[in-house]
Image (cartoon, rainbow, N blue to C red; front, side):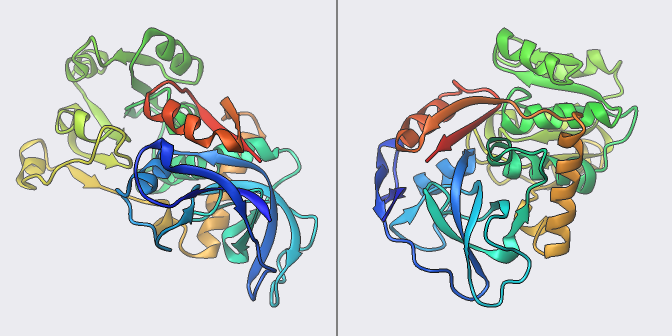
Length: 325
């Protein structure tokens, strides 16, 4: 029996239940991982609330990314051995001291990446990789707008876009978060509670607007985000921290300048193992050479998962949060 955090009924943070569970021996194509750290992400709250349906029904173990050490190998697994350091993103099951992982979803950790770093960055960092390198290829001199620039994905996006030579504009909720964003590659910050972010973007860019807007906020920033984008630019919606964007008349994209709009997910970009490895390698490269630093701002014992969710949903966190079994 090992410790885990399970959801027996969907709801608020109080439904996260700390209890003991059995972990079987790994089956074909599986590895058993002793977890050293588990990442905490907004998507975890979506599953907990029932906004995203659990693929395994109820009850389920919460969490979607973690890092640890391989302690057993199932039949047919050839890419890993006992003792390997690994990290992974898999839908559900991560808030646990040990678990089974599909071997084709795990990646080996380079020696210069710690377990804590990996758990704090796999989902957010691989998301950032495909957002700036695949969904829209950020290049030198481009204007890019990052909503929630001081959040977990936001801090990584700002650093990465800055590394690629872009002019990085970020919206934040407080002066403290503005300072944090600036320390992480954001050139211009906008206090969205106090300022009209569309007007400020026009001012900052001299009327040229942005080549791309990355939006993990959702309802409260749409459709104003579209007014920040140059003709033929792209709106990238990758999260719903303030609620989902309601259905809209697609003709608005034409009216705002023949814009592109997309709602990408890591599942699609990393569906093939070769793509998963390429995305992870791109992340390990920029973190390994210090171009992107992973800020672990909150660290909780596994039994305090509910508090981690309260803090995340209450916008009381910056950077990444992890749980330690």
